[in-house]
Each structure stands twice: as C-alpha cells, then as structure tokens.
Amino acid sequence: MSSGRILVVDDEPQIRRVMRVTLSGAGYVVADARSGEEALAKLREERFDLVLLDVNLPGMNGLETCREIRARSEVHVVMLTVRDSAHDAVAALDAGADDYVTKPFSMEVLLARIRATLRRSPLSSDAAADLIRFGAVEIRMGARRVVVDGKEVRLTPKEFDLLRFLVSNSDVALPHDRILQAVWGPDYGNEVQYLRVFIKQLRKKLEPDPGRPRYILTEPWLGYRFRMSGTEAVIAADSGTA
Image (tube, rainbow, N blue to C red):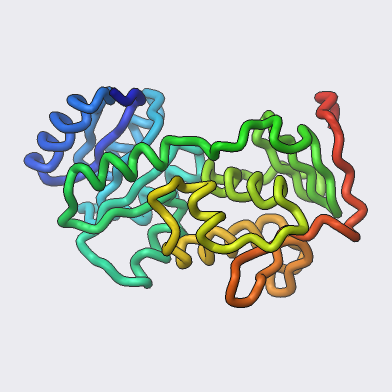
C-alpha cells in the first residue's frame, strides 16, 4: 500500500469520483477540486504531496494553475492531458510539472507514474557533500537549497533531484537513460525530451550564460556532464552558516 496526500483537479465529476476511489484504494488520502482557482485555495489551506492536474480546465487552465502552484509551492505535479505531442509535453514540463500522463490511460500506468514522482531520487543526502560551492552557486544538499549570487533560487523537487544526481556524478559523461532511471525511476529511459526541458530550466537558474553553459554540459549523442573540475569548487560539510 502507498501513502501520501493527493489533490485531484478535474472539472468532470465522474473522473474525480473514479480517481478518488482508485487512489484511496491504493492507500492515498485524496481530496479534489473542480477548477484551478479551487485547487489553489485548497493548497493554501492543506498540505498535499502531489497534485493530479488536468490541462483542460475552465477559467484558469491547467498550465496557468501549474505556474501559480510553482510560484508558491514545491508540491509534486503530474499533469493529465488528452493531447499527445512534443509541444504539449514541453509546455507541461516548462510550466513546472514533474511528469504528464496522456488520456486515455490505464490506472496501473497512472499509479506507476505517481509512485515514480513521489519517490525521491535513490541518492541519499550522504551521496554527495553537504555543501558545494562553484562560481556564484551554492548548493546545500541536506536542506535542498540553492543560492545563486547570494539569492535563494527555487527549484522544483525534480529539478533538485536532477541537479543532485549530476553534481554527485560530476565530470562523468552520463547517458540519457541512466539519468532518467536514477531520477525518475526504472520505468523511464526513453523520455529524452524530459531531460532537455529540465536541463534547460536548470541552466536558466544556475548558469551565468544559459546559452553558453559553463557547468551543465551536453555530451553529443550521449547525455550530459556536470563540469566540476577547473571551476574552483568548494566541497565540504554544511556548518549551517552562509
């Protein structure tokens, strides 16, 4: 049995009922909302571990809702869409979603995606030093905090898990499938578009010039490499001081 609190956001009552019954049967505590506005209100009032968010909502649509959620919360978000195209996938992930599932889908697939999203990267905080500094960037692994130029930068949970994996394997050329399976889970491996979107977001948040990355480098036809050598990096235990 699983555990966790899930908010289902969909304007169709039948879908909300099916989701509630299925997810409750799988061991989750479930609440639901009919609109993006109602979802945001519930997120202000209660704590949830994951939001299942339909893209096609009346009023504030799913992408707008996801951006609003990301502006104030690190809760996991899985988007549900009836469309299946690279553009829609990029739009969902670019809005801050951790994953997306295309309708129609089997509940087994959805439950697997939920488990993968809720699962933290298998690396523990001991897999890398607690405190890492390079350039103007400071990463506190245990606290899951990133500071750039003295200002804290908000990363989504999956963005941080990806960054942690890259940093923990610095100066190693990592294939796409290895990164996907380490960060998203063993059921992943071919979703290269996921990585492109998340790498782009990390570069925007960490790199001095995202168009000419200094740290998160592309390995052509293979994957990515986090360049630590030659950056005058500081790797140490976190004393708790800035």
